[in-house]
Amino acid sequence: MRVFRAVAFWAIVVSATTSDLSPSLQKILSNTHGNPLYTYPTDLTRGIVPKGIHSHNDYWRSVPFYTALSVGCISIEADVWLYNSTLYVGHETAALTPARTFASLYIDPLLNVLDKQNPVSSLPTSTTKHGVFDGYSAQTLYLFVDVKTAGDETWPFVLKALEPLRSAGYLSRVENASSTSITYGPVTVIGTGNTPLSLVQPISPRDYFYDAPIPLLNSTFSNITSLVSPIASTDFAVQFGKLHRTSAAFNESQLALLRAQVAVAHKKGIQLRYWDQPAWPISLRNGVWKQLWDEGVDLINADDVAAAAGIW
Image (cartoon, rainbow, N blue to C red):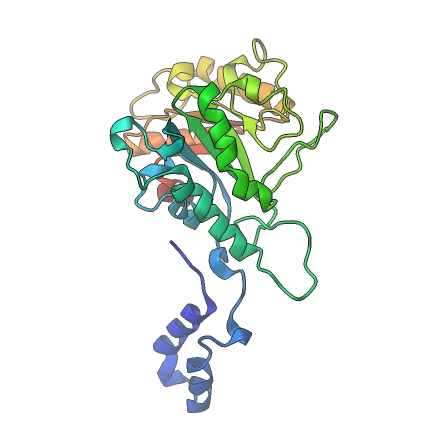
């Protein structure tokens, strides 16, 4: 995890330029550690620029959540399985362990970061909660919860697990049935996988949303608005099939389909994400990322988040 601290910067300065500094200035620099004058209270994510990247299967990373945060991902994903009233995180049941729960991998770390970005102060502070990115405090973090077990049974446990974020005022929400916009908070929860639409769309007020299917936004799901689904997703491979092995260029029909889907979603104020994109060759993967971004897709679905963050 990248933690940008002033003391670390000054340590580099001191070690690199000691011979160029006067003894008096060297003494000042060497004594800044721990001094409240040189400790920025919300510097955990200082210098990290948010990027339109979705950390696909985020729990696969050596350090879930924090790795995505360190490169500026504005969206992360956790697959959850309900067993014995506990939500476990993993891609399949063989990967589940008692220690790796939705609370331990996501809820608790999110609270830790957000509490650091919203420190208690004796001085006047805004009632608006700051998000996870220090220099971009209004940027929400999308938390996709991919329900793997039965949705009707599992979703209520997801909502219960969100209570610490809810009680702290960190969740985006729709205030009532007559609301015309989302009141964004530091975290925007989006149910996907087996999440039942019937447990999301009619509920008001609510602080959770639904991952609608992109191809059906102008047909079966035409009544879905951005208040229900601020982001919609679909399987890239199913929609577009195979691309040329050495070129990421979409053919005429593929490009027409992409542009039509982008237009429908954006007209509704809904952002788009495509998963199951080509992962290899790397040149093909990177080309697809760039093509999707250039055509207006809002979130680039990435397994290698560092590569996605560095490609532009």
